[in-house]
Amino acid sequence: MGVRQKKIAVHDLEIGMFVSDLDRPWHQTPFPIQGFHIRSQDDVRSLVSYCKWVVIDVAETRDSVEQHKPGNRAFAGNARRTGNNREVVHLPPLSIKEPVSYENVTTMKKELKMSRKVMMDAEASLHRVFDAVNHGDAPDLREVATVTRQMVASAIRNPDALLWLSRTRHHDDYTYRHSLNTAVWALVCGRQLGLNEGLLNHLGLGCLLSQIGKLDLPDSILVNEGKLDADDFVIYRTYVEKGVAKLVDTGVSRAVISVVQGHRERHNGSGFPEGVRGDRIPLLAKVAGLAEYFETLIGPRDAGEPMTPARAVNLLYEMRNIEFQEDLAEQFIQAIGIYPTGSLVELTDGQRGIVVSHTPERRLWPKVMVMTDRAHQPLRSARILDLAKYNESRSAHEALTIAECLPYGTEGLHPEHYDVTGAESRWSLSRIVGA
Picture 1 (tube, rainbow, N blue to C red):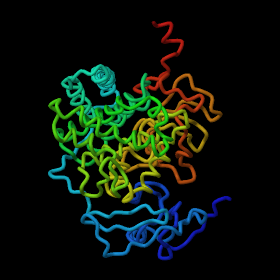
Picture 2 (picture 1 turned 120 degrees about the vertical axis):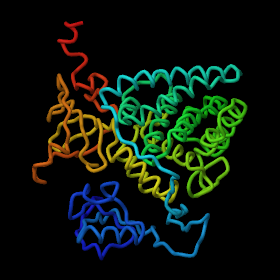
Picture 3 (picture 1 turned 30 degrees about the vertical axis):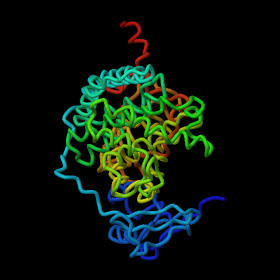
Picture 4 (picture 1 turned 45 degrees about the vertical axis):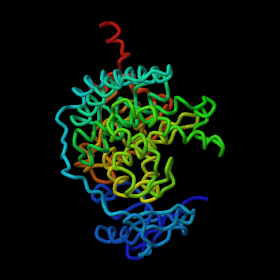
């Protein structure tokens, strides 16, 4: 059945409706994604202050979302249940003590030169740590801690470089790729939150080590990680405690261990190993859990098709105050963008490319490295297209925007064949002859 769109006044909005369009450009509003469900009267009030009318998708209307009822307290917040029996927990807004305001101090071109080696060193150091654990030896974490500090420094200078590498580099082993990419997403989010450099170091190292307990799990469980039966899941969830046990005598900080211990806990208590929720989950563990979940969506272990980053962003937004705290989920989306760096996209004129970077002020108009023409034929030399600048003096009818986000691995799109700093094909004839 298709989706029927209906234009209505904002005062007629009801909880459960899906808003698909506004009477003004999305980037002129504070809403972190394009298209969202009305989950509370606060959402309605926010829309009233910006719009006179909106467009809703009638087929997307959900009767299962209940209006918030005061009085049901849970861990300094309100709790309720959705129609699918998932508890919703409301907490006061996050409060970061003495937040740091970061600005990009290097260009992506300059930062890529430094961060590429950092990512290679990070993977190599993880290999050595995991090999030591596999052989029953006590892991030496000094090297991985040093690499973590280098990753943090890179994320502080310009986070787009690490994001780009995490999406375009090829890794030999899923566990290393998953740990590294989780750390990158978490550091970008932590930077957005204003965490100081020390906390970012704890967060990054905790993410890199969060999967170490899986070394003690049977291969038969790991390869089927996304589709375990009840008995296997009981075994699988022990990896968190196994990981903590391996780290307690290594000299790492309690903050790092708390990240490992809490990265699978969930806001509404549906996680493991302890099932704690709300404000009983440490902040760094909350960030790590959100980042790890996002990486699982866009880079699953099994051979199934990964979710596009844009779809994963929408799913995270739907899960706010359910599995992830609302303002934390929204800050994560603000940090990585609607179309995160490394997302493959198709523009409204048919050209295809990959997102290079974005700005919070123009969430729907990122910089894109265009790799194909309108007929989807690969270009000999890619080019960087800044959609915000391109659309600046154009009418809405003439604007060039992103039509859809494409699955990673889409045929004909090979960003690794291009040098993003110059958007020139690495395999061009001139380079071969010049070599």
